[in-house]
Image (cartoon, helix red, strand yellow):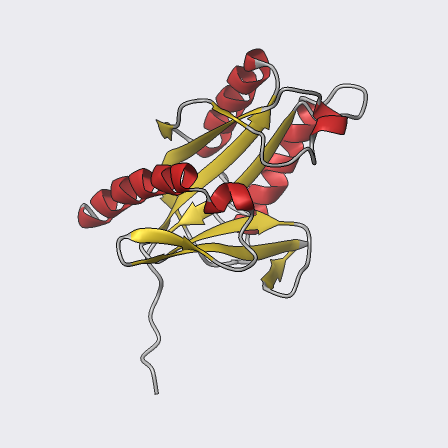
Length: 185
């Protein structure tokens, strides 16, 4: 029998896909007001792995990854906390931000929240699939990358952009920040 214990807190991350830098700045300010201080922002990268968002958002699209200083709970607690601390609450809040910055019912930013632990990267999604675990309130957890042998490793279902070496390197940088924070707890 395994001994049950509370999990460690996790590092909140987000991917922001956008076309206009002004939208990115506004969205980042909004996210910071909800989730607290941003402690990492990647360089702005071209988003060219898929055309999935182009019809809605236009071209060329860009992406930035961010993480937040405050660690969050990996649990799916039923109570809602302010600021939001669990993946379902966070996904609902990021959806509200996307709607706030939409024009003519088209998103100007796509925000994908998730978290990093020492062992994995998990994304929140509203879409069910074979490898996704239902959390609550319409939100699923997508195990996107696992950390093995000093690197994040893609799985057979990992999106090609998240599987790319450059993006995995960004997540390694965020993971190092996270591990440093855990030492201070």
